[in-house]
Image 1 (tube, rainbow, N blue to C red):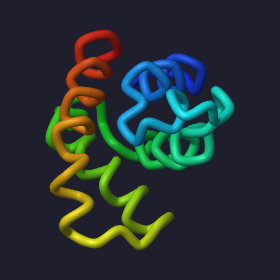
Image 2: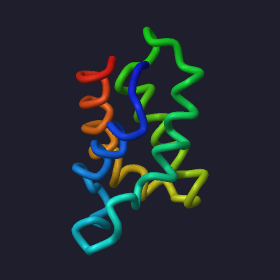
Image 3: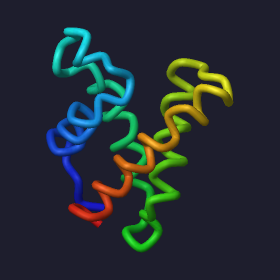
Length: 92
């Protein structure tokens, strides 16, 4: 998948699924997780970079980075799906 850090960061900033940017946090608030997501995407062949695969990668990154429980994953899954949809649409 041919998506770069700046573009993916922008999608996460625009989605602001945790409301961090809206609360006044810096624009780079999602940057660390985006870098982890990009690293995971490097090993995914283009034809396997589906929305559901991207959502699974997002969940893995956030679960491992923050030890989120299943309830939190269910809460943010629609946001992850929307982000994944945009990534596939623009970069897939």
